[in-house]
Image 1: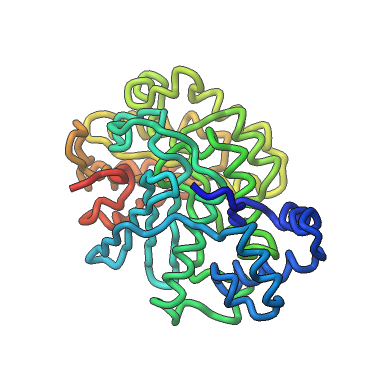
Image 2 (image 1 turned 90 degrees about the vertical axis):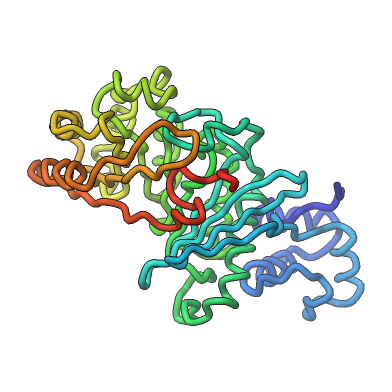
Length: 356
């Protein structure tokens, strides 16, 4: 493994400090990040506004090293899943989901996941570690570089940010709030004018409910939050989500309600609810969910379960999902049903880390 500094790991303030430490003018750091994030350039010799000597010097100190593509799968619906390898030869997965004008990149935050939600295939895999900043930002960088060429019609010079997708969701493998520091640093690079200049309001982070970190996230960013609640009471949630024994439903709702007077906070929060046949999809479950959320004006996203080998649950039938949705709408909750995308390549919710 190289001792060179991977520049995808650092924000502009740190890169400026590094340049000062090696005896160079700090404005060179701004020029370098422009090459990295505006031009997707990882070859110092191509950076022609630097002298030859400085290019050699940078090459000796630095590298621009995102995860590398190991495998690419394309769904019949246009969804793309990349299996990527880190410099430590571990695997992560990143998904691109096109739907009309909306183009969403789904990125991972950990290798494996320690939470072991019963309906998610990654629970079958061993948890290894948190992703580094360079591995989180690197997923965005490599996907942006590939897609900018492949779907040039999406990439518009009129757009202020530098990425060929409209939304980023931190919903891949892992619990992002258990990697809080690296996730927050990555968000700052992605949204920085010296990074991708991507708008915070177009980023959604999904969490199983690490209550203390929810509060810190809402204090420190303007991104949107999706809470994987998936049950109307602790009895059901204990059964399908072991984390509930540490952070139960009330602790999660309390964390949100602390921000009730915070500007636009509830426009930023969605409750995710996976529909499991005979587990959490009955009429009484819908009424109970409406009751526990009655004082919290959040949006609710119902997610049809995606069957995966080794996971002993079944998708709720369409009638149950529609009935559940109508009950919530009756209580004036904005309620949507997620479209399944990428199921044929195991790229849908709960299917990542699956290998044929």
